[in-house]
Amino acid sequence: MTLIPALAVGVLFGCGAFLLLKPDLFRIVAGIVLVAHAANIALISSGLERGQSPIHPLAEGPVSDPLVQALTITALVIGFAVTALLLCLAYGIYVSSKTVDLDDLSHAEARDERELEREEVSV
Amino acid sequence: MSPAIPLLLPWAAAAALALADGQRRLVGWLAAAALASTFALLCVLAGEVFTEGPRQIVAGDWAPGVGIVLRADALGALFAALSVGVLLAAFVHELLKGGQGRLFPALVLFLCTGLVGLFLTGDVFNFYVFFELTMIASYILAAYGGQGRELRAGFVFAVVNLLGSFLFLLGVAAVYHVTGTLEMQAVAARIRDAEPSAVVLIAVFFFVAFGVKLGLFPFHFWLPPVYASARPGVAAMLSGAVANVGSYGLLRFGADILPAELRLGAGVLLVLGTASILYGALQAVSRRSVSEVLAYSAIGQAGYVLIALGIGGTVGLAAAVIYTIVNSLNKTLLFLAIDLRGWLVGAAFVVGAFSVAGVPPTAGFFGKLALFQAGIDEGSVALVALIFVGGALSFVYMFQIYQHDFWRPDASGTPPAERGPRSSLALRAPTFAVAAIVVALGVLPEPLLVAGREAAQALGAIAS
Image 1 (tube, rainbow over the protein chains, first blue to last red):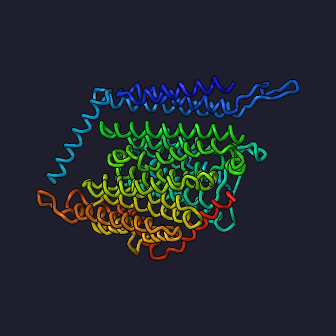
Image 2: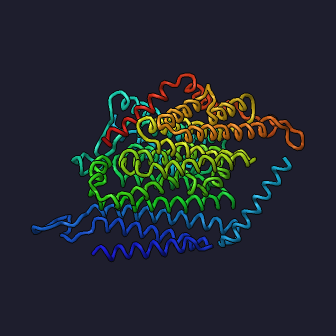
Image 3: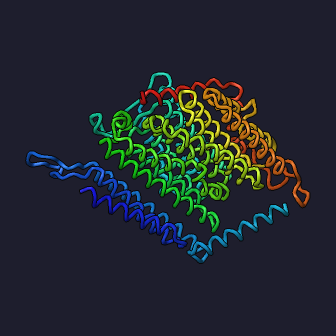
């Protein structure tokens, strides 16, 4: 039973890590989203057990663990807020540099650095 | 006093001020008043904790073991008071300088809430929630109002630290799976009986998460662009208050919850700490821009904390606490001082520079002294030599930058004092206050040493 969530976590984390290495801002954001979901599934499967719904158990027998669900929904909300923030940052970079390609951005970075150096030298 | 009061005050103030226009002076000063009263409350709380022992409440009056625990012990109360004090000085500085954005006061208060919450929580998952609150506020502050360069630095900062946060969350999930609880004290008690291979993995997750936050050597690459491109007040907040999260996390999760794994990984900590110290110091020596020098210096200083942790024991942990306090004050002082011009500003910078290099009569001397003691206790010549070399290199880079920025006229022949407008006395006041504290702790080190010892003993108390 724990094999399926474990595989899901592994695949999600792997895809997320792969996307994080892509030279494109929006793919990086997507990578972070996948890694976040890998963590969420790990969280929910850390207390995975069969049982009755904990809000009102009717018969005798095991009750499933409600805590992990509360944790996961908190983590989901945080992940959602963080994704929105990252997209805002990526959009801000797009507006100021007119590109979302990391190679172009690092060229711009190097240009800024050189200008700073020149100012330093002239100082 | 209940630990909930200093947590709820900035939270309510942040939520209320988020709706107001932060560019108005009144809103800014209300936020400063909220920060100041939080700081005062935390000082009272820390006093109580130091004299009468830890304070604990369970949220919502649930039975212990069911509800979420807020727990103020010596280490948590000390770090909370220190971080909020740093935030207060940096915020007043930015406020007097003016030109901050609409949301700036509310963001700083959210940052304060997150920091107080994570230092005073006794629950692993609650720690994660406050950790994210702190980090989200710092991502926004780092990139706030910036153009291309700041946004790019902010984006890298956010992505790398989010990856660290999610690794931490995976660690939390593993802790819950292994121990069936999230309350720190219960986790510490139960994890000793858990399967060692699982616990080592958890320890690695936590170490990487806090290493990223602290800017340790292999995880440091996001740090210099962020510190160099942020406004000086914000850089002071990040390096003086937010970086404490990394040290606190390593102390709390390493020494308190996973002491056996900390001993197991001591060799790794010493190697990475050494790498951080040398890398940070050598990079700092080769830089000419003052904020870059300070950023690389922050990487080096994080290495000392790691070394002290690697040595361990009460002496090593006390050295880690003392060094974190001293380093946080130094970085705040230096980042604020580089933003100023005028009478005595150079003196304030020199106080910070002396303190980084560990020259008396500044607090930095006692930070280095504690490290030397820990190194001698360990009986390792190499460690003592490393601490000495690191100190000598920091002396070189601090004074190089001091000479460059405060002594030499620039190409057009303008003397440094006339580069830019002279700062008003009120604007210089927060910096002078921090400088006065650094000197005072260097002359009368007793509170610093007692605080370090008490905090280190509080850590041992749970572990044993």
